[in-house]
Image (tube, rainbow, N blue to C red; front, top):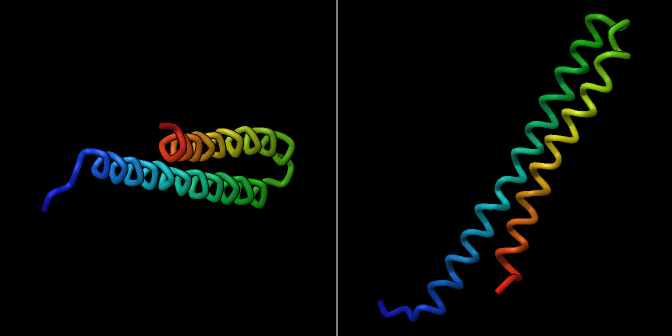
Length: 81
């Protein structure tokens, strides 16, 4: 099989972008875990809601940022030559 270097690099670029996009799954899993545990904690002790909610929101923000970084890397791999 004879592949020129341009075709090989293009294929590796698409493969890298696909693998980087898989990183977006981690954000979804993280957000689900954080929210589930926060709801569980508030269900056990409703008076702790004022302390749990700000911490949960910070955790959600950090989980979402990792997904955005993965998406940014995937887009950069696809469109920057």
